[in-house]
Image (tube, rainbow, N blue to C red):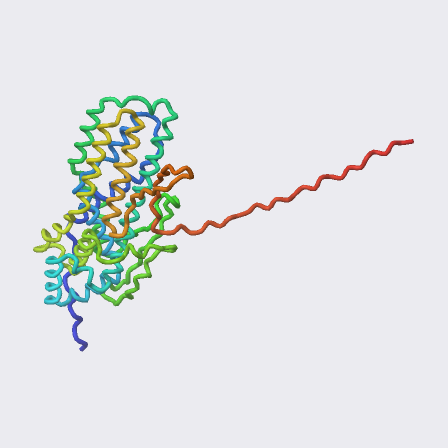
Length: 381
């Protein structure tokens, strides 16, 4: 009789707190994605202000890391490499201990570089989407001044500021359906299609980078980091190591969970990995800037500016910084000089990290009409 199959090790497991945290992040990103530039009156401005400001910095930062971990768990090469260790209890526990002692260790596991690409593309796409939305809203703060209502004085400015400050300290409820969907995607390695887009520059033409995993999760997978790359990509520097603390922590959570050690005695330690210090600090600073902006705001168009700059653009930049040490969405000021020697200052828009596909130019063929020849009428003699 053939020998019995080798034990596969404990099944993939994920702490429910991770998918719960990720659901809050996904819900906020989806809500912000729907924020358009259209404002018709002061009440709409206030509604969008509260909609955009409705996140607590630490919770959103934890949610971003949690979502990134589930994105990393979609990578077949990463899963297959780790499942090879899962069957050996000694090797499995040794790897878990090393990761918990130093989350950056997870980045050295074969296949982690490909999983990291998924994470960086997903988070940087979210960051750039928010930034592009904010840039459009900020520009609208100037264009709507042609409408009389925009120059109206904000009603109850102190009450509006108090409500906004309260939203910064109020945690959001878990989105149960989304948490369940994310948990299934993490456990199976299927169902979560991460996307890379150029944000507003191409109307969010999303490019799926999800690779359908093998039916046998333990089978060998090709460690081809280019396999998931979208077309027209020209920002390889985004993937340079060292990764950000948030990406390292996401890889660490993903690795421990794929090894089957994400729950039980390790659950508290794994959940603690969500606490990346950098993104909550950045998000908290953006909230402080928002409060200062609102305190100085008087008219409705002022509030529109605050929404664009300090809710959407600043938040997008924080998510971008979480994704990669090489990504900074904040435009840099350039100083040039006019012919008369005076300064000419301008801001350069952030470069899209994916080059848009070239647009084919279509030239309409025009046919020149030849004037009809006229002959002079002959006079009858």
